[in-house]
Length: 227
Image (cartoon, rainbow, N blue to C red; front, side, top):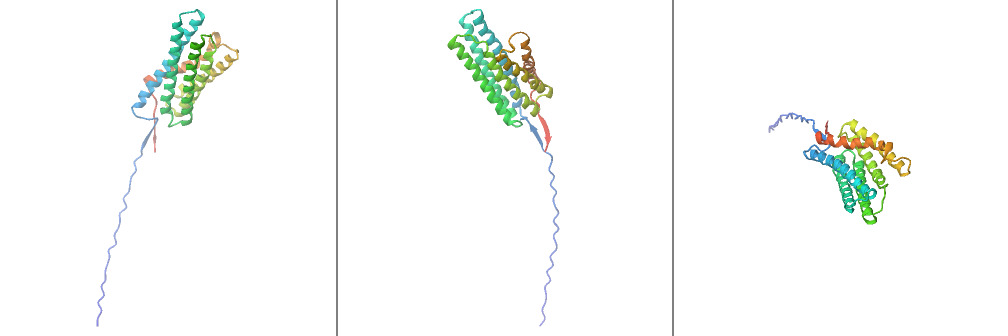
């Protein structure tokens, strides 16, 4: 009896590896969509609105107490202080969206300080309307909170690089001077509302004037990195 053997030959299969090419992706820091431009304009408007409403409101309140102007001057001054408070609070809220991706802690701190500044301005207005008493030093309470907020903002801008470095450095130099001058004025060591003491307000004031102009014309800078 003969046995036939079956040979089954299996052809080897050669699998050709498929190379996957991953193209470099581009990540934009600082929210690159069109709303960033609107946020920059909003922040610039808030800075200018706060500056002018505070300056005019403060002048009206001082004129009410110094030259006994009509009660309407006090009402208008308090109203403008409240508008200033709303502007700084809106500033903090708008900047939080831009700063959070790079500096979340300072973004939150800036927002809290701007809200505190808003509440301080409203409290000052309520005090004047309720008491009709003169209080020259109220600006110092506002300046201290505003100076602290400006210092936090300048530090966050320096880290995030969404504005030029020399502009953020102006804030980092100006706001400590502004803050120190306000604290010294509380102890009657200098006077930041008259004479040479007003120089303490100049660097911070320049920052709050130049920054809005930059934001109106250039907006926030976005940085592209390969990942």
